[in-house]
Length: 106
Image (tube, helix red, strand yellow):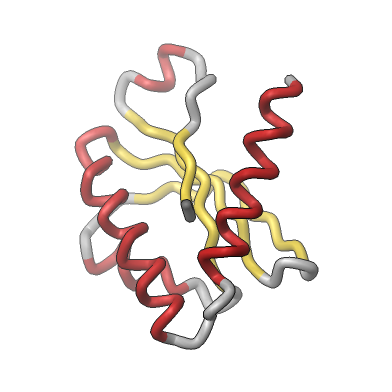
């Protein structure tokens, strides 16, 4: 798992957009993939934790681009592995699970 969809967002915000968080490396490999698929991404926030060495990026996309975005996230996972980030899937999964645990407490 290298991305998560927001579930608790006010209804009016879900009329036209989907909200996601995804994990990317310091060199932003997802940018090329998202641009190549013509996905309109609005970056809402970014966080970097040196312990993980990856960015957590909070975005908004148009509803009609959901499938293309999810396909792009699969491509991102493959691109990270090919480029030598062999710990990417483990780190991304760890970050997502940590966030889910924290969200359950809210």
